Length: 222
Image 1: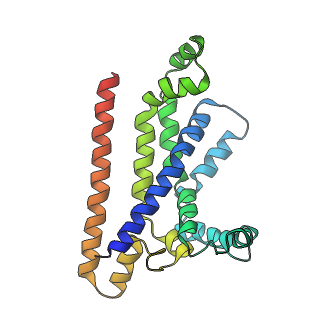
Image 2: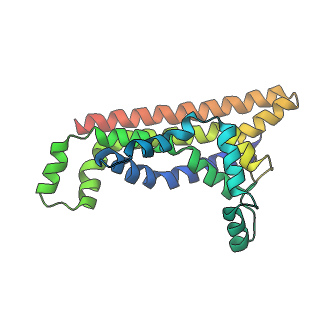
């Protein structure tokens, strides 16, 4: 069992969820309630990582983060380290390829809120921030939580983009999915089976706990 790879995967998933939580709430709410020219294009761009092959998205991220790119050069000049084949690069890539998993469920959660409730909150003199915190978030909570669970689980299991952007550096970019692949390549199927079972157990437990919490909150709000 590669505990270092598991710890790195959990840390990567945790950072990804922490970054995308406010993004999913704010951007999901914006797409749910606002109508503007080009909205369909914006929603299509958000969904693009979901339909693109991981190797295609990974290639573009690798080129974008590379030393010869403006972003890669700027990162190198400011921080003195390269962005590709680093944990920081993995986090940024993870945030990008998890955008559809984080934003769309949250958007659907906000869209399910009756317009009358939002109008009532406004008539009561609530500020937009207070209405978001006290009225909208409690109702959209299942969608937001679903978004974060999908993001967490997808990050744990992602392989193609992680391999292209981060490689397989032990303790730095070798996640549990990459470690499983390496063990299979080395014909160590026993270790690969153990790590796969641990990954499945973590994912199933996370999803089951989320469903239980969502059902409990749903009964409390009904």
